[in-house]
Structures are given as C-alpha cells and as structure tokens.
Length: 513
Image (cartoon, rainbow, N blue to C red; front, side, top):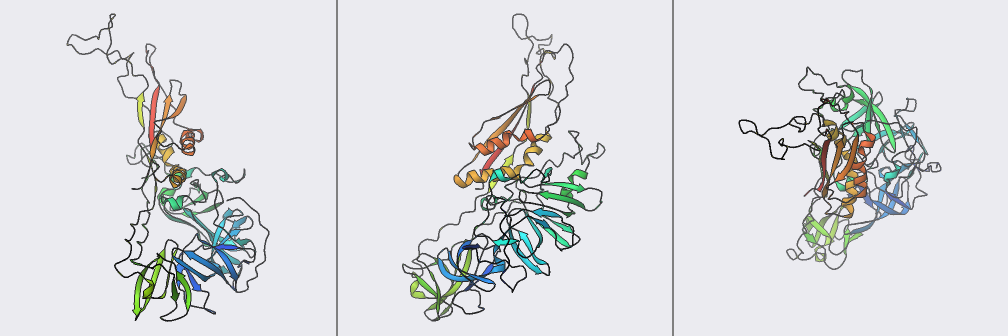
C-alpha cells in the first residue's frame, strides 16, 4: 500500500455524519462481513435478497442517497444490487492521529492510504476501524478525510518502513487475542495469529507487527505500543503474555529459569507454532444444479425477475410452491435467495457429482530445537607413536582430555529458537507468497552457525530444500538484527583442542494437509 496523500473531498451525503462522497469511485469494495444486498429492482427500501462478504470489489452502476448500485457477479449469480455506503471500504486521504473523542490526546497514528471501515457515527465524525491483519485499530475520522476505495489495498514488502520518525518495537505479538483499551474505550482489537493463506497474503503488516511495553509500573495492567507499517497504536492490556519485559527470571524460582542471563524467563521462548491456528473449511456446494440455460430468479413464486443463476450453479431448495422452488445459492463471497421454475434445474439425482471441498491452504512454519556440537571433537582415543590406539592396564581406551572433548559443549542455545519463533509471522508471510504461486511448495532450511574460540559468529544456510530467495534472505540475515548470547571459554595452557562450536536449527515449511 503506497503512502498516498489524496485531495480532501467534502461529503455530499447528508444522511450520515462524515460519510464521504462516492462521486470519484468507478468501483467500490465491501468491507464488512455479512453485508446485506438489496435487489436494484426494488423501489425504495427492500428486504435483502442475500449477503456478501468483505474484500469483494464491484463496478459502480449508480450512486444513490446513502447506498451504491453495483453489478454483482459471484459464483453462479449475476444481478444488479444496492449496498449501503457504510458497509464499504474507505482509504484515509491524509495521516490521521488516533483518538476516539475530538478533544482526547492521540494514542496512535494511521497513515494516508490505510484501509478502514465505518463502525458508527458520532457528533465529531465517524469512528472507523482498520481492516485485515491481526490488529484492527479504532479511531475517530473527521468529515472529508477519507475516500471510497476502488480496489482492495495491497502492500509490497519493501514498504514496511514508513519513515525515520516511525516508532520501533522489540517483540512479536503473542498468540493470545487481547483488546487494547483506554479512558475512552477499546482502541484496538488483536486477533489470533494468521495461518490461512488467504489471510496471510493480504496482511497489511506483511508479518512485521511488533510491540513494546511503555509502562511496566502497574501491577495488573500495562501500556503497550503496537507498531505496524501503516499505523501504530498504544493502549492498556491485562494479559500476562504481553508483560514480557517486566517478568524477570529468578534463580530461586524453578518456574522461571534464566539460562542465558538476559533477564527474561526462558520457559517462554516464543510459543507453539500451531497455537491460535484456525482455518475454516469452506461450505460444501449445494446438491441441486442449474441446467444448461440461465435460471431467472424472482422475488416470489411467479413474481418479478430480479437476477439470474448461470448454468452449473449449485443451489439448495428452501421451500416449494407447486412448480416453483425457493432456492439458496452460496459461493465463496456470499449468498443469495430467490424463486425459480423447477424446470431450470437438472432433474434431482442427475446432477454432476458434488465436488469435494478442500481445506484452505495454511502457512505452517515450524522451528526445530537447536543442536549444539563441537566442530572438531578430536580423537576419540589417544594413539601411541606408531598410531595405534592406547589402552590402560585394564584394556580400556585411553583418552587425552587435552586433545579430545570428553565433555558436552557448555553454551546456552535458547536465544536462537526464540529469535526465529519471534519472527514466525514474517516467515509465514513470505512462505505464503511462495505457496500462492506453487501450491505444493514445501521444504526446510537449516541455519548453521559456527562460533570460534574468540566468539566470532559465522553463519550459512545448509540443507535448503525450499528454494525461495526471500525466505533464505530472511532466515540468513536474522542474526544481523539480533545480539546473540556471548560465548565464554575457560581452558588450560596445555589444551590443543579446537574450541569451535557448531549450532544448527532447522525451519520447516509445509502447507496443512
């Protein structure tokens, strides 16, 4: 989503406070779930003939008072319908400081071009909410500072840094859902992590949301700031997973070990990659099928036609009236109902086999446990001058501890898994892009780190079976933005051992099966 500054338009609609004009929009997009649609054949207010879902965009046929007439094409349905303007998607025409009342101090900022939907009218304008992604922020928009969106907003990965003065945050969002609140009410709603491919690909934060604790002095609740590419918002939370900076590890507390000495409890090194996972299967197609000719839909048996179902469309019979059937047609974007002549349907039992419903793809990314080993363990058994293995008087192998590592490596590795898992939303996003182009894309890559005796880190990717340049770059460069645990070595002057360590962790990418 480019950061665009549109010219401010004055609302031409008088029915709703702050409602922007649609005069410049050649197409509009639906922002709200279960948006009712009314047939254009009805004069004045009419009963909805069905519902459509968000992210669908339609060409504008006519602009009316508080509603827009569009040509709706979806699944096997085609017809002219009207949609209330407050169910449409809008884009901010300028940067908007976030507040819920005009006289309040701002608690965030949304950039021009951010997509929003209208929640309610107020005396100062309208309260809107951002769309898509895990975080939906609520704030007041005054009259004339937003425009109808002609297409659903998208964003490129290289647009994640809006400017040098943009605030920064340290940690990835925990998997728990939570509401950010303030004196004037709920400021933002944080949902569960995104897994479904369809959700990940349109995430306006492209997996880059972070948060930081800004006030850790309160006992029961704390103020956090969530930062994304198009907006940041600050509010109070009461979920313990959001209080990470204030939870200090204690040597006396067995439940809160601090293995790497960074002041954070290591029992919480991220979270289960599948926690919060929720991808719903689509509704199975209805059993009956429209025959080889278009089937006109009417408001009632023998009534006036208002739309058509095209051949092959699937329907469910709701009720009958002689040779007339009231049917329901469902597709991915919505549902409509109407009456049709039963002759327009293929004879029951003669329909094509109902296609199987496949579970939507999910971007499942799993981080394995780090594996630590000596780069050069040295000889397992000491040898004599002839190169033969030495044995003691009891015939047991002789090992020289100054040449051979007989002990396990002593180095905390919890930071490495934490580092990867805290960036798992970003990994899901880039894997989702690969999965969208190649539905069978699966594989793994191992981040291999060598730490020499001086503590110098050398990294490379090995055993890469998923060839995606963005993912390889992301995994390979994670250490550049993370300060790993320092390595300390104690050794005697007689040592001839190589003290270099090998640290490996594997990240696996696989769609849900």
